[in-house]
Length: 185
Image (cartoon, rainbow, N blue to C red):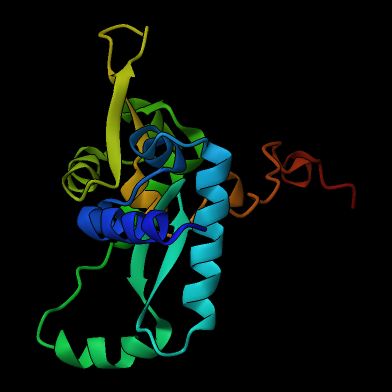
């Protein structure tokens, strides 16, 4: 890879920070093919992983390339940010987020039908954290908003695509017939 391209890729990835860049965006800006850009990024990723003298590496999650700190830095980062508590998601928020991830695009009413409880507050919290977004309106009565997960969700859960989500277990929705059988004794 030409040194000029290497330096440019590093500079652009550094500039966008957590936002990351897609290979398509980089190809458009640098005026090279997506295949060339991806090959160069793969080469850069390997270089950063193999070099133990750097504290950062390039990752590829949710279709975006970005710089992150290497695992060996995390111990020190935890100390540095010890006073800052990372907000965690409640069980209700995780359930709502999982439903959206697996069933998207989905309306709030459909989420509530699955969960069996109201989810207006959870949807607002997930929107505020940029883990979900409105992606249009349903054709149902009242034209409710449809929701889907965001690139921030993909990044937070380190997913390349939603296909990486675990398979859902098979459920048996038929009633237990033993409950309704007459006692034959």
